[in-house]
Length: 538
Image (cartoon, rainbow, N blue to C red; front, top):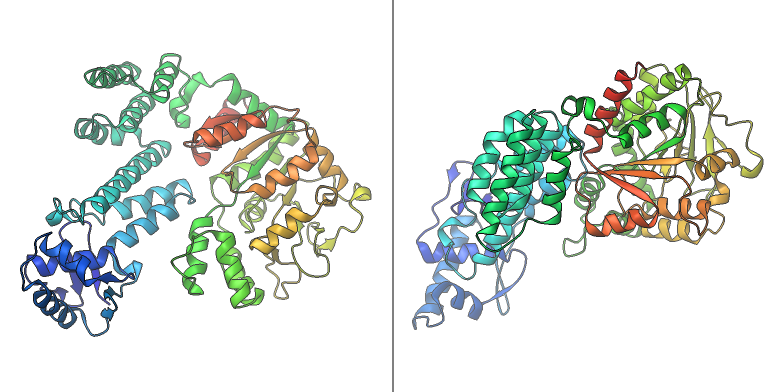
């Protein structure tokens, strides 16, 4: 299979190396077709883009000759004649730009270390400026600018992940170069301040802000509110960095969260990890039309409609049964029961909208028995929850209002899985997933959904603080069930949401529920909490 490279000079690489693509106009023709891959480009449009607004009289003949030459080079069937012009048949994975975008999209929902690796792999695909030889051609400039913007965002995210992983000192030099090359890109200045602060260089972090302000002042601009707030947090030693950098400057907020977790007054809530990657996997496996939005609920609905829920569940089972390796979040949460017992507190209730077995494995690794309660999205018990005590088979919760003694946080931790769960047993009797559009419509339409939660857990949810970790606004079903439990009032207990770079919309959403935003990577933040627990003497 041929590989088409746009992230640098145009190249097409086969099994034996780069192919000869002919002269500049033939190369430009291929570039235009690549940028419109899968879409018909009219002959008139091709002539205008390749030969200019005043093409020679021989342009049509020359274009046909170039198309024939491309077909000989690329192989039969790659360039198709389709009225009123031509279409290039190339899969997204055949282009370095397509692979780059897939990697940065998947990285958004990956764990911290994996995200850094995926972003590093994505950036390694670049060999120079995108479409470098066509830098001043009208047909290439918009796409080249778009790809360059994506590259800079991916670079920012990779550096941010490196800082959160405790590598702040390693990226300072790189950031100094980047603020020199992109002096008006405030995110690089902010990352430089963060990296210097995390490296114990507060004075230099403040100097970086002064340099950024002076640079912007030359154009009559002021630093953004975000950069000004970052400056104030550096001044006050309030900047949340890696656990080692936080040291004795932990805020009252972080200590309050730690104390709430140890006393059982804070309920951790985990969001669905890897949703974008899962949507891509399903789309590829079931040939989802690429001209439709790559949204997990839509892709799942397409699969269930075209292939049936059985193949969809088989694919999901393979994904989530294999996803058992605990991450930092899982292991931190699995450490809480022992700490709660040391403090004479009840065991934790952990809520998740994920389907996998990572949390169960983390608790098993430290020898903690847990009760698992999960929603049933299909089958005879649809709309109810099931309960699995340690070492026993799951059983439906038929009368949740009386189901109290069977679940006690005084006895064991409880894991509440709001969107269903994978069943590792061969029969897969209790496996179900709230994942298709129809599933969500059914979920939304159940007025008794909150009442399906066992009475003791519902009461716990009503009188607890929440720590949202990796939860996104797209997980609206969690908002639905918590909203029904809380009623029309705002949350009576102050809560927190840990997000690395919340948007204005996300901040407004959290503010509506009286939830404070903690700007941090969830993996890094639980590392900080673990460090605070250690300093408190467990």
